[in-house]
Length: 271
Image (cartoon, rainbow, N blue to C red; front, top):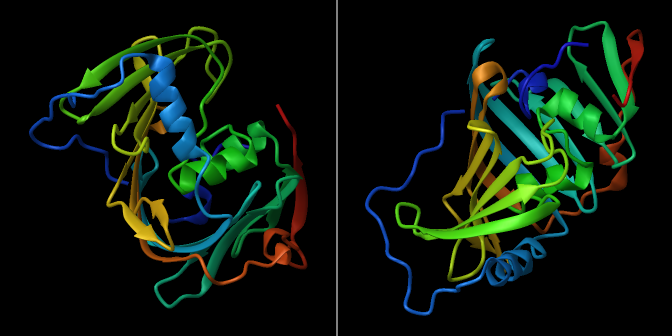
């Protein structure tokens, strides 16, 4: 099956590229001096976050396949459970992708095929553009992107971003990468939040994820906007969270998908 693109491409909805803040900011007087110290601060933040959430978003995508805008409801529950529901302007269900962290199902209204399979990184990548474990995808959606395995680190202060820039020279794959791939993180000094992440293969930026419009809800610091660029298919994606609900319970049944009657089930392989 041909990949549908990034994140909500399957959902027939989805940004606009991420930019850098204007001006600049010098490193604070008490700036950390080692990469491991910055990593420890980032890990503390990445280990936080809500156990579950109901996210209502507006999303837009521009890519080689054209431009699409729409509304999406995202349910997440850790570890590894996520459901995307693409909605029409009148809130009719257009498409669904759901995974309980083990299996997934996906279909689009009016189509004859319902896709199912294991929620392995290959399948997560096939339908979202991110070949990650399901729980790592949930982390990306709530501003807690994963840290990939690495062999060595490089640390600088990025004045334009007003944050530490941490390069993790990797040992293995993320987004289809190879040994020597770089994961670049921008980490805030004040609280360790990761405000931007890039994945670089050589000089090519394979993926660029930037978080902004941060807000505190129920003592949880969460991004209100996610901007994504992907080199594959020249994807520019923007997700604006219009409502973030951390109180409503999310039932496990929401993450299993019964394919509509009359559709053909097509099992997707993990390669």
